[in-house]
Image (cartoon, rainbow, N blue to C red; front, side, top):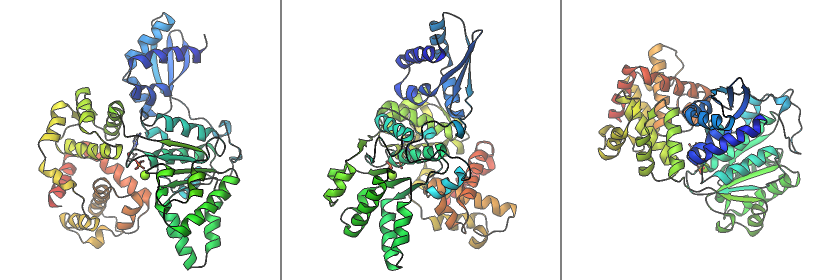
Length: 448
Ligand code: ADP
Ligand code: MG
């Protein structure tokens, strides 16, 4: 039996015993690379997927032993990424040349958020259809599902899924011109291009892309001029075989004030919806979010949280953020049922902090706490104390107010988003080992 066939049988067995979210997000991404002298090497696409699958080692082993009637040793490894030269299906619109343009450049131009990738996306009942369609687009952009219209309530992962497609297209072809923008931005730029008499540049900017990702298209409803211009942009791209992906809070026919001709264009491809996550998927998301923050949860705690955070993914993320900070500030990196219960039932005074805070207020509180001038906090002097204060402020702006990296960079004296990302990662890493830092964070909480 060939390896693929054997592995298919093994994973079919696992499909029966494991939760479907676990299966789809982790197990289904594995591949049996080698089986020799009862030693099996299993490839995983990312360290995170490998780590998750290792937890189910006993299940993998029993299924493989069963299929081979032998006693095997299993090892999960990170599969070498596929080289661009061998990158497979290139749709009609992407020419398979990989020379000059670097993915970093395309990525920087694309407006994509680095975190919104397929690797970070949990797949479960509520989004597996949308996910499968997204994979189809990645294989054949501009061809099969064009336009691709994703709709669903707030925080269910529309933006994340759409951007994951964008990331993958750039990965497959670093020269692909992928551009993400909220529909509102399109409207605003149109108006300002009219004012500055640069409408032709505006048109070029939008029409020269290989793929546009238009978020929250419902915002153009009722705006005649924006709808008119979007209609022409859409047609120009669509006729040239370029991929158009749209999201909205409802399906095209339910968007009030959206012109009929746009409704019919939007419905001319594939329309999918994403529902709020069910219990299993919420569990998988909770595990993923905790993992990303270096926290482990026992299974009772996961079930308890999945029962009690019964809403969309954005809220789960927010709650997990609060839970993590609360755990870290109490020096805990393992969360059990008790901790989870207390988190819900005894409002922790420090959590009052989580009511929305004004960013400038937060900056000034941090400056005061470290006894430095706001100007120094957001300035360029690289003294050790100033740098720490800056990092902590950036961390708080990101985690507490959920500001985008760019915005935080802007507020902190016009810094680049990568330096903000660095600050966030540094503080996140230090919080697990540095109790002084945890205390400082707590102190600042109480001042806000
Ligand atoms: P929407 O655009 O539908 O309002 P987003 O895509 O902005 O929702 O998702 C809200 C948050 O939840 C984001 O931080 C996103 O990364 C996260 N998220 C949403 N869906 C998933 C998922 N399936 N797996 C992991 N994280 C998710
Ligand atoms: Mg969104």
